[in-house]
Amino acid sequence: MGNEIFRLLVLVPHRDVRLTLRKWSAELFAAGIEGAWSFPWVAPLALLRRFLTAKELKSLAVDMRQDYYSPSSPGALSATASLREKSRTNFALFGLNLNLKLPDVFFEPIRDAIEYTVSPTLIGAALVHGKLPDGLPNAALAAPPPLVFSHAAAIANMEYRFLAADGAAKTACGGNNGYLCEWKIGALHWLPKKR
Image 1 (cartoon, rainbow, N blue to C red):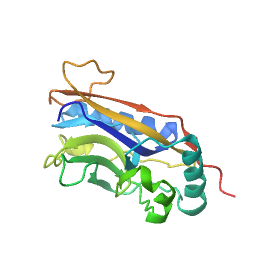
Image 2: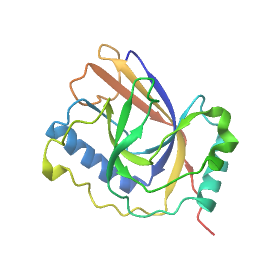
Image 3: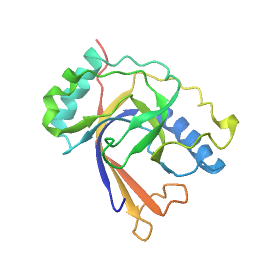
């Protein structure tokens, strides 16, 4: 896997939602979820070839609020979102399905920046190399926490980087997999209030 970098366009829920998901994610890792890395409690929308400009992010935030984004409680657990095409190293994202579908026309203004879109839209709790393990470490932890998903959300660029274990990394990714990870989320561009 080496030192691998993902550049992502992400939907960032309000801080209250992220704190609840962070606690749940920590419980999963403490219970011993195998072969997984931490993920920063955001929803990847697309894998990017380049980071988006502030102007592009602001425009997408307005378009999303006007035409596509209607927050509700997240749906069932899902692990089907992939951060890599099938022909490359595959990473499955484990988290809550937001029931948010963004059509191709939403991404059209930034088509040159997109390697591919990520579907379904999940708020991440863990990133797994290959497929998820057959079961979670403890049946009591399988149910996600109840979330009240408010209208507050933002979009941003995010960099997610794997480092060999001997590299310097800010965030231990969990699991006993010989790699560390770190991430950085760029400036948040909040979705405006709907008129």
